[in-house]
Image (cartoon, rainbow, N blue to C red):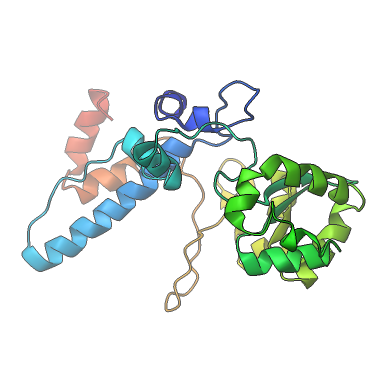
Length: 256
């Protein structure tokens, strides 16, 4: 995962311009490849139901990451200016980034002209939408640093909680910068049953992150804990047609 994050260009996109290339904090290449493998398997099963023929599903870590870059890769393919590290700034939209408040950090995503007007009204700066530097998103991106200096001073006047309440009242997309522990305690996480409790044969009670895929016609199922090493080997071999004597022989040969 680390190697592919570097070779794909992801590390060159991650971090701040003055800092070194930075690895994403999760195993993104490994996880993305696994999810795309599931998609490929489902496509193959649908094709099999139509044609009766199976096929090989071919997934690579590098392909998986490159497929996620969207506009970054398109910028590199369509212009002479390759995308680089921008910290928390969006390459083509502003204000759409992280701001420091009195108590921490806040993410604000002003992604349209109507939101821009609402945002300026919320922060009590009605002159900004008519400022010739900031009338359109294109102009705001061109004058990003000037706008950033103005907004940084404004956001430091209130706490994160105060800004979040105010901006939500004006329907501006806004969110706190949580720790993982904080995120796992959020109300939507609980309401969507994303934290489950299972019993592990060695550990005992174990909390885990649940299945993010919710199907309207499927009842919630009892999730199983992570298996112990080799716990399901015999069951899998029997499902493949191996008999008891054959399994014993494989174990003696230390093949399984």
